[in-house]
Length: 254
Image (spheres, rainbow, N blue to C red):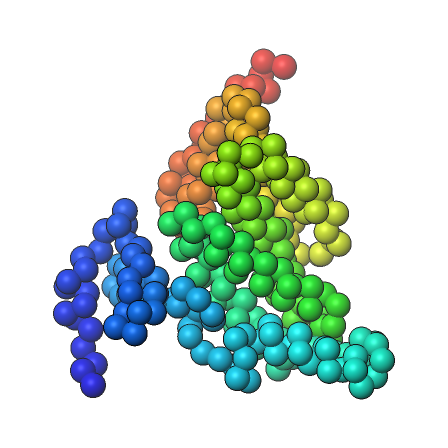
């Protein structure tokens, strides 16, 4: 087996605007490839992103769903079922794989599969919330639940908009805002940040669906979120400065 991947990299030069492609392999299996600055990532389009079948199942999530089902058959209820640290690590790794794939799926407009992957991660959140033995383990995942809900809602809303039913898209976004607001509080800075950020982003999306004009600050806030999403921190700093400048001008008029 040839170890040098230079020919692949040379064949597909890096271009930030054209760095994702879906290709069909020789066995007719479709995969997503992402050209990075110094490499290529590949994700399965179906099943687990890495193509593996843990415990002979389609996913770790499926394995734990079966474990709970079997536990109930033996014990009569879910009471006493736990997810220990080793279990958590398996679920966390799978959630991370799903995260990286659904970022790409959302980017290329594959909203159905984005919903699929975010649904899976929300189910992982529920498992840890209900059965996680260690609070620190649980918070490692639950701190990002507002973000997962947001992406899930945006993808479902986009599906409805493409089907020309904006009123359903509006309901999806409104429901997600309420869901995020009602999340149990975590004493975690990332959770607080993601909660505020996700609610603001969804409110701005709702305004766009309702065709209400956004203020300059709201537009800049969306640009800031997008810049942070792709880790363009230099651009994010510039946008923050503009938001601060506009906010000061607005305050001086009051």
